Image 1 (cartoon, one colour):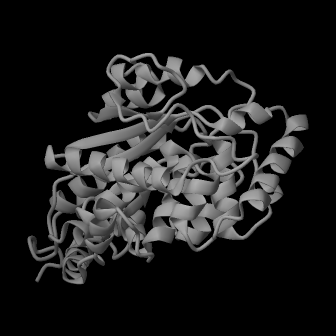
Image 2 (cartoon, rainbow, N blue to C red; image 1 turned 180 degrees about the horizontal axis):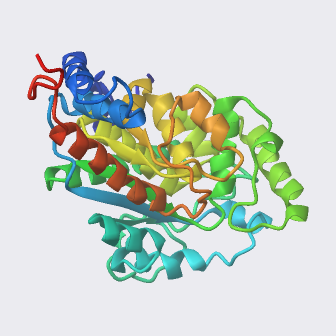
Length: 355
């Protein structure tokens, strides 16, 4: 862990991230093993319950109040032609996170969760209704021509995420998901995963939101040249974020770190959030223990990211929307796990074996 200047919030957060409570995990495993079923027969449901017990440091816990914290930002690398859609879509779509009419908004309504929309770098001066304004600046710099942001801005991203996580945890939310919006943000995300995974971008670059296959080589070349130009340190998550990242990706990483420090589970969404998870993991590996993977994204870099973090998502729905949609969908799975864990009878409670 680096000693950072002028980063007291970040340093304090990192110092407060502790391993899961093994005694609570053991107590949960004992209850799961004594329930009226073959041991281990509920698979990942049991793993999630044990993990939650370790996170909350309690044999029983409440997963009822859920929120997706989503961040919006634009990217200077867009000018390299790495995305098929107009950049303006970011500012047009992001208010729909707040009013509940986009993908994550509608799924969140169904599962009884809230969505918070936070602008950390959308390329507009317009105020967006319902969107919290934490704009660092309008759009990152073009990483194909130099660093995407300064190191100070990278730290600011992380601290905004930490602040958002702490705000909503203090409001009583017990499960936090992360989401994002930013045209062409698969490009910096792929760069982040390439750097941390030590692989050539060609191995993991996908079409994102519909890039034509004949443009895929160009996208690969842009990512590769940005990495070669900026030379991010693969062991320094803040340096990677500054050199080839995005404001919304850094803010999501900050939420992960903030949730970890505040002993709250954080549900990881799809490909963009995997990049954020890798940054958080690189900055503080213990943060991985607080992550729950929601779904297996259809983007090709998914497997590389999940292998590094050692996350096993609970859903495989061929989804690649982003926004936090997979995290919201997984909330019901998490609640089902907890409900079953609390309410299934144990052998100690009934004479199941006729003794």
